[in-house]
Length: 236
Image 1 (tube, helix red, strand yellow):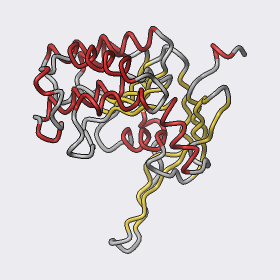
Image 2: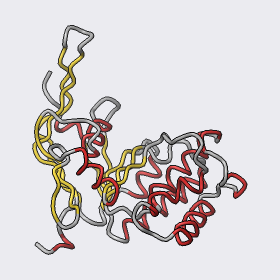
Image 3: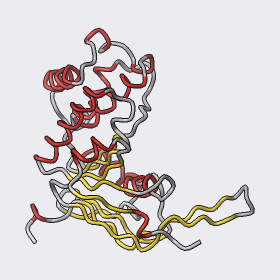
């Protein structure tokens, strides 16, 4: 198999349960035997009712949740890194250059100006300051965030404005793999359309994506296929 045709995400026999220590250690099964591959240019949208395990799967792929068993492999520098077994340093390195995550919430140090925040992923990867500033300004303009806001910390912004900053920060790096957790949840119709175009552009460049979208119009516009998580529901 050539490098270009290899899946960028390979999930094998994944299982996840939660133990409720404040409820007599009750065990809550989520899914088991889950398998998923995502190739370049694919946007696989997780489907199913609330509580079926969509967000749990997303966080397991990113490394925020440790699965009960199985593996999550991400193609990084030509080799697969198993996120479930990698050291914290390795996971951070994969996130820095290969694996991006767009959530509906922005978590940043309150005093960092917006433009600097959006530039950071480029600066961390050696892009010159002027080029990083130009690209960040272009993306913030495309997302219709007023220039008067660029020197302000986004902690002072509305939810929709914070979400646009979050999207700009995530898409500026052109990550090979992107996880999209309700990226348009706080946006109006015009900004949703802009995000759809950003997603399509990234897919056209060969990015592999896993997404959760409750907005059906957005989902229909970007999904290359649906992945029903409920088919791997674990027995109680």
